Length: 340
Image (cartoon, rainbow, N blue to C red; front, side, top):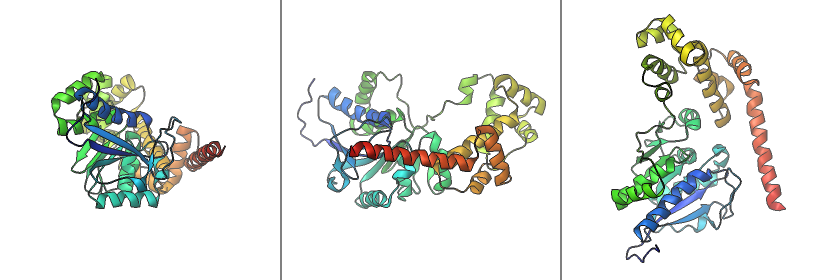
């Protein structure tokens, strides 16, 4: 079916592509708009691809999409929203020119959205303060530490006034369906979900990661409650006796539950949670080693470094340096390919 001519202007979105953006998240968002046009038989939506330089940029899978236009050429008249498309190593895309341009759009009353880690750029621009938002779960810890005035959740997506953000992966499908529903109604959205073979349309109350209770079933409420307490108290840790008291069982019972279902003792599980959070902060923020150690409940930086080395096989300072060098090498390789 070919779209028919519409008497009203199409709703226009612009997608700002950042280096190493998530292709699956971006293509899912655009796919929803394309499906809306196809099913309705009308040109309901149109979209433009934007980069700061006007040159194509590689996604995290190495692919490039063209044509793109430079940010300076984007027509803001009748623009529904600009959507920032993030992915890997988002902090490396956080330069003053980009942040300044995003602020300019906000000053022009343009709605702003973000896919995956694009939320980080909006927050760095000061454009998410006082707003509810979300970001990919791997970046939640660093986002919360870096931007304490932003209301960050672990939900699939968040829509708050003129800001909308999604966590990544195919969560952009759910967010775009919600936005389409507001403009075109639930009937079209239901048809889109059928076309895209979606089992159900998820809403913003759905969370990103599979809850532990779904992995273990509903027969272990004490265990899942304990893990939830651990996850909520990484900076100021709770003793095992206190955890057992909070969930209403004995310490020995709690130890048996962890051993049977998670194959480890509670203290080890708690330590791994804290070290995993520490690694996120180490690689995704500029926090010092001592600040990271304190944020993850370690009594000192040397104690943290020892635990980190024992678990990951490398001291935290060396891992941060290796990660930084790997990123610089990838940029150099990409530049070399483009020059050749």
